Amino acid sequence: MSSKSFVKLLRKVIREEVKAAVKEILTEQKVDDKQVINHGMQMAEMSSNPRRTKKQYTKNSMLNDILNETAGLPSDGPIVSQGTTDYPSLGTFKSAMADSFGAARTPTNSVVTQGINGEPINMNNQAVASTVNAITKDYSGVMKAMKKLDKSKGKKVV
Image (cartoon, rainbow, N blue to C red; front, side, top):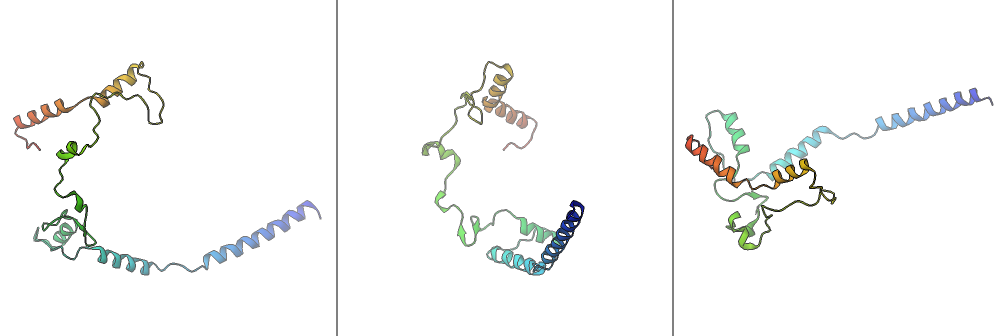
């Protein structure tokens, strides 16, 4: 058998096998899109909070529906998901109480000595040193000055 006839025969066999494989893939059972959408809608209905009451934000019914769907917290209590209160053990915990619970705080004067991969940082390089100083600087004085400036301009300060 010559090499040309072998190549032709090989191409013919490959072509037939590819046709059969493609036909098999195309005739596989397809997922019914409508069934998937209906299932998703049922899941969304099940997960929605039935205790939530609709509020009247505007006279426009479509806009009112959208606002009710995107409203943050229910007015009658904590966030409820699937019948359980999220983080019930926190109670009346405030972030100001973190120090009394021994929460770790990064000191404002800490010097970074390692990169993200654990390699030592060359603080002799002026660009590196200025970047590290900018990142680790205590900006609380700047923020106080910004609040003072906002107050003097009559802006609402949070």
